[in-house]
Amino acid sequence: NRMNTAAGVVGIIQPSGRAFGDLPMATLATERLLQLAGGIGTEQRDLGVLEFHNGNFKEALAHLEAFQQWTDAGHAGSAPQLVGDGGDPGVGVGSTMVTAALQAREDLALSKLLLLLRKRSLEESLDQK
Image (cartoon, rainbow, N blue to C red; front, side):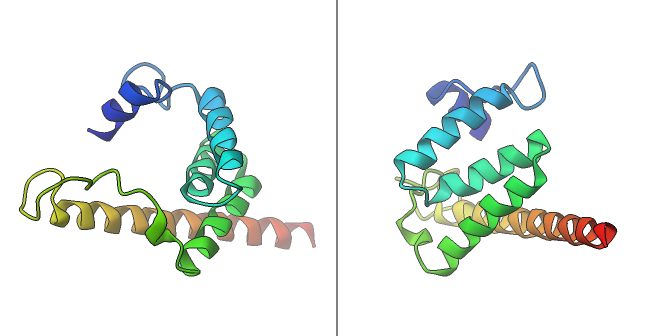
């Protein structure tokens, strides 16, 4: 599973223990990765999700919208494809079909999160008036 893979490589996200691992450390590491990437890329998405879990909704929305603009500009094709790298076109783990299904689920989850954050932002702006 992806969490065990990330824990083995990065050592930040863990499949057991606290629900989301060490959020402050994961946030700091992702902020640094974003800086190293020049402030663009998939790290924007990752940082946006971490900020959401930390309860920083405005920051989460800003990062996720920046990621969406980056993907809409056609740059997402340059992102690493870790799930499907080296996989065969068959049906097993790492296959093109599994990778496409995971990507569709990730895209749907991102759309739902953006909708939730935009709704929250709109409600907050209406409450201030």
